[in-house]
Image (cartoon, rainbow, N blue to C red; front, side, top):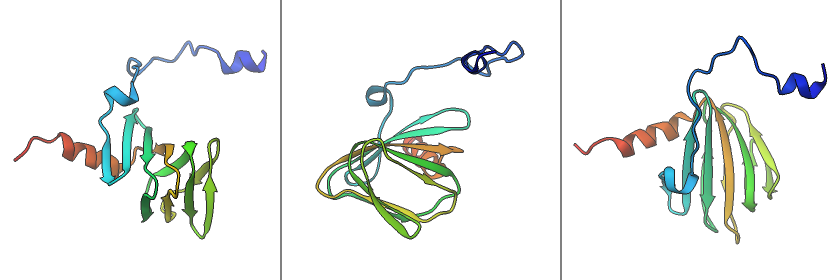
Length: 138
C-alpha cells in the first residue's frame, strides 16, 4: 500500500461521533476582548480549540501560564513572544510550541498581528470567559 493510500484511507470500523460543521470566523464567532486591542475568536471541537487572535499595534498579552498545551502560529504581522527565558519576533509562517505550565507573553510593536492559537485540551480560561458572556444577567 502506498503511503498516500494509508494516509487517506477510510476506516471501515470507525463511526463519526458527530456531524461536521463549517464556521465563518467573522460572522459566526463572537470575539472575546480580554484587554483593549486583543480579541480572541475561538472555534471548539470535542477535544481541541482553535482561537483566531487579533492584536492591535502596541498591545500585550501579559506573562501567564496555563495547564493546556498551545501552539501559536503567526498568520499576519509581527509578534514578539517571550517563551520561558527566550524572546523572539515571529512573522507569518512561524510558530511557538508552548508546553503546559510554561510562562509566556506576547506583544506587538508598530504592526498589528493576526495569529492562530491551537489548544489541547480547550483553554479553560477562554471557555470560562465565553460562558460568562453567554450567561443571562442576574
